[in-house]
Amino acid sequence: MIVLDIPDVPDVSAEWYRGIVGAAAELPAPLQAATALATDAVLAVYLAAFALLWWRARTRQATVAARALAAPVVTVLAYALSETAKEWKAVDRPCRLVAAPTIAPCPAVGDWSFPSNHASVAGAVAVAVLWSAARLGFAVLVLAAAAAASRVVVGVHFPHDVVAGFLLGAVVAAALPTIAHMGETTVLRLRSRPTGRLVLGAGPVEAPTQPLRVR
Image (cartoon, rainbow, N blue to C red; front, side, top):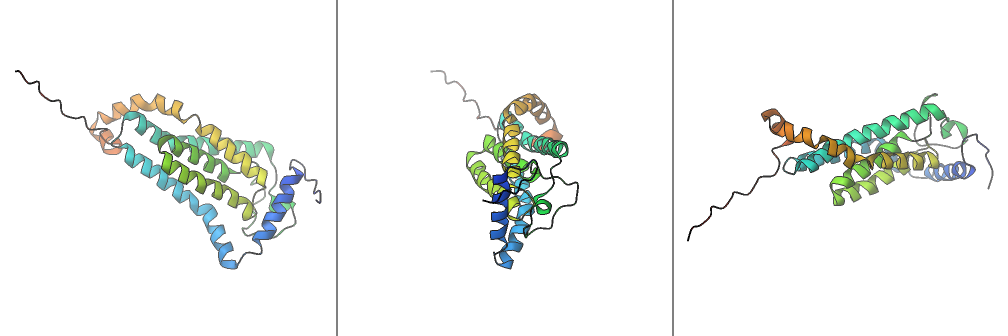
């Protein structure tokens, strides 16, 4: 193994990066183009997952609705923490530090590499959806992990950028139940109003009470 000796970058991560982007450069052009498109287009899938959680929660208890509403909140929080860490560490992109071909254009100077914002969002979305819907959550988890890994494939992140970002997002999203619990009262209050019911739904329909029979 050739040691690249890049400051703030583990040698093994730099070597893996060079090997992965080298293999990606050998892919057929249509597959390269599809990968470059999918690495950002997956954000639309995350939004669709949030929309599905919201729609399903309209007929569920306040706890479920609060968790659905908290999912995008923890995702934005994970992104903000990731961006703060990027500015603090200020590690340059691998596409400028390692001589290797890349599928995607290298981001502008000052758009730092560690940790990966895309991976942070992916980790947060996966865990946030898992808190509300197991089946959908596992499907999103697989997709999110693939999307995070694609950031290395297209050449804009080192592997350790992606791992750190994904873990950051997952840890932030682990707090979702606590955040959602604080919002349950607000959900109940909003559902008591016509406008709130229009957005959040009326919640579960209570079964009618059976009258007592006198014998």
